[in-house]
Length: 190
Ligand SMILES: [Zn+2]
Image 1 (cartoon, rainbow, N blue to C red):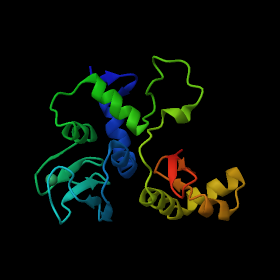
Image 2 (cartoon, rainbow, N blue to C red):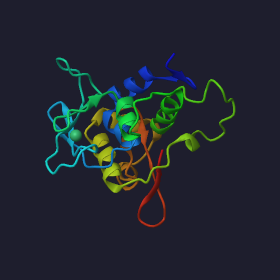
Image 3 (tube, protein in one colour):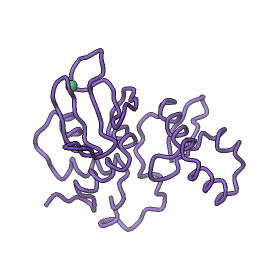
C-alpha cells in the first residue's frame, strides 16, 4: 500500500494538480518557471540545456494530466513523486520517500495519524531557502485573484497596504505570508 503517515501518492498528485507551482517549488525545483499556455515552462533539472523544455501541466488536456511534468529534451515525465525519485536518482519508491515528499509539500494528513502533538503547525513547513522570486510570484498570484484578495481584506480587516507591504500571496489553496529574516530576505513562508 502506498501510504505513509496519512499521505498517499494520490494526495501528493492531487496537491501537485491543484497547486503545481508551489508543489514543484517545495519539491525542490529551483529554476525560473514561466507560464506558457497550459504549462509552466523552465529549464530541465535533469539534463543540461539552455532553452527550457521542461514543462509542468497546469490543467488536464488530452493525454496530459495536471501536475505532471514532462521534459521534451530528455523525455523524462511523470507525477511529482517521479520528479522526486528522479532527483534522488532512484527507481525504488519507498514509504520514506513518500513521507519526505509529503512533508516537503506540507500535504494535509501528514503526521496526523501517528503524532497527536503538534503545538506549532508552522514547524511542519519545509525550511527551504525562500527566494524573492517565489514571494513575488505568490503575491502576484493573489493580485490576479480579485475575489481572493477581497475576501482576505474583508475577513482579516486588513488595509490593502498591508497586503502589498507584507507581500501576502496565494498559492492556489491558501494565503501565504512570507516571514522576513531581518536581512532583507525571508526565512519562511506560512
Ligand atoms: Zn530534461
